[in-house]
Length: 344
Image 1 (cartoon, rainbow, N blue to C red):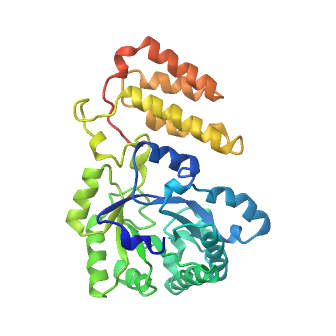
Image 2: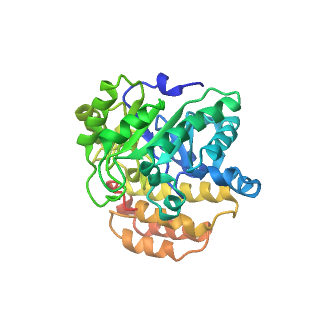
Image 3: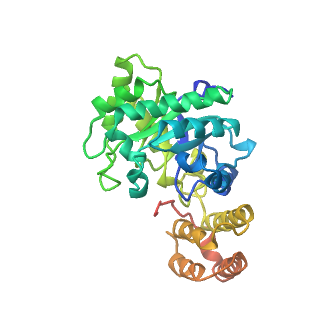
């Protein structure tokens, strides 16, 4: 699969790379219920991947299965030489694409000059894109390089920042319609995604533009496509507690129109837990799963009480026992429709 982006039917809908979320077990869990057009790994440090010890640890974050294709590995670094080396490794692993994180506001990432800090040094950002392309060629591969970024660091500088990135000809560019300073404290500015399309077209660039920010459903995503003209939409927080997100038919509000029942949400939480534990085999803490229970076990009668009990347990067996007890004692709740709400 060379440039898979060119083969996607527009508009397309993709799942964001989310740190400590979109690992191999989570991705398998999602595609069990509904299918995004493209999947991303969690972001991985290119610097760490170039270190003998770091590489062995990070390779477990770059595991994927054939049924996840097309799948993109996301890397971050401030050093073009490290990007080139890491891109070669990723290309040799068989990924369908490489994405460069130029928007993460994490302080530890930014201290390295990576993530959102890339927006402070446009020349180096361009060099990173070229380095990734060089690394792909070093591996004897031909896979696309893309970028995920924001409107700017402290201020919206889209008119200056975007043309610089487009000059490096990434295959696709995901625009989170906020600045780094905004974090998620203000609504995403989708009118700026529309402006990004205009800039792209004015420059005659072939880079695909993917809008990102505050999209809650497939219907909402299609509305954003219609108002901006973007090629695709990336979902982030909306996936929490709602693995059916990419299945429009399951997003109704009643049983007759395909709404999600309480029983289905509870069962999805169990399936997710089981897949997580099976994949990681103790290499990651069971406690990390509990943050997902806030999303699955909410917005239905007695959810707060059930969630509180689940949070206290230390194993899948204990979680399953609590859930089965809840089902036996409250059968009247199970058939109710529970609207998905992202809470993380």
